[in-house]
Length: 332
Image (cartoon, rainbow, N blue to C red; front, top):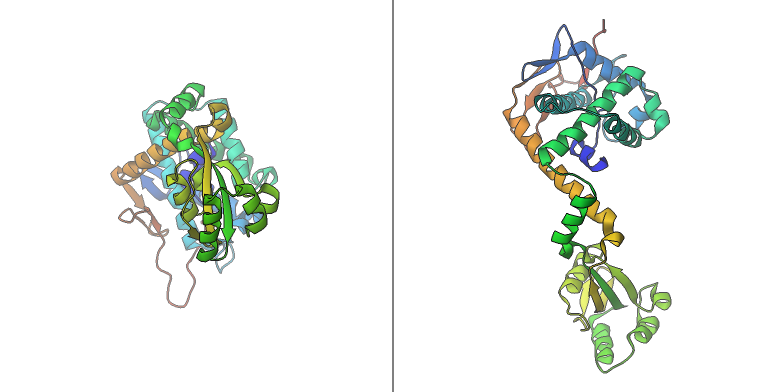
């Protein structure tokens, strides 16, 4: 669930649904209004949650120069995500998808983590928390529907069986030295039968070598820096590598075993891979939905631009010698 929410990465705005709105629209998505009054209330909810606002302000300004105003770029990002959530909501309606209590519970857990904890989440109004939770839950059910991926024991086992190469682990020993000449010398000694562990413990510059005798254990090559990983991936079991240079120095490497661990040992990694498949499919669907959508934005908040790689609301240009701010209109 946490990874599916990453489609709305950074989550600058915590967006909620607006139902049955009347009055001016902040935006219209396929004929459905996002009411300006509801949108302004959302801006107030975020700006008024001091702890959450401060976390956002590490990335971009939230408050405007005038009292009761917010920065127009911030408002544009909030509105962008409202539009995305509206597209998700419309797809859920089209497919007659139901949000269960379990979906809501998982969504709430993810939101609490995203915003920085239960205390921060509780600072939003009860109504806002409920609407926000439902929107996140809808993302979850729509992702599963459009990706046609079930993250259960059967799908995890099937993915593992079909992609065992992704979970291959290389059991590696190495000796780290400062120069290529020193690495050549180490390789020559090892080639004549010298004990790898002994050479590593007495010669290697790796701070852990005295304790582990150069044995890095069994893990995915992806855990190493690129040059080291490339050497490990292509090295036959039992053979010594040519000297390999990385940012740490020069290495002589030996892969003493290459294995695929049982599913029980890598179940979490496999589950994440299955979820990533779903997230990728959902991201592709969302891009198509955006391109097909008819979206208009109240000029007060900017314009919707989907010609770029990341469709978004572009805020209006600020007047000369002033900051770009917008003031929420009074609700009611």
